[in-house]
Length: 142
Image (cartoon, rainbow, N blue to C red; front, side, top):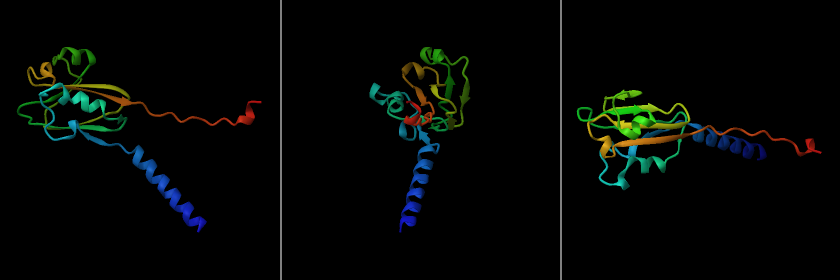
């Protein structure tokens, strides 16, 4: 019986470890066609991003009409000024997936003229990897 309980406990721990370390895909705004000019500050995608927890390896997914819009990954400076002249990356396929491959902020703006200035932009902050701590035995500190 003890062996069975230990086996179940081990399997549960492995399952929890895998489920918490597995990369996730986030549909931007948590709904299809959320990549649009927000009708109010409450509908800002940045509000959605602030409530989400992104980790290295996760991906953002946008769904939008490629004949009307695009997604530009930009620097912080270009994000603030809504400049589309020198993007880091351009996505125009209508079903964009961007892997978050490092910790820190990622900046995105709409490639459609005038949309960024009207609030169609997104900043996400990716959390850094938790560092494992080493246990130091109290017997070493006499």
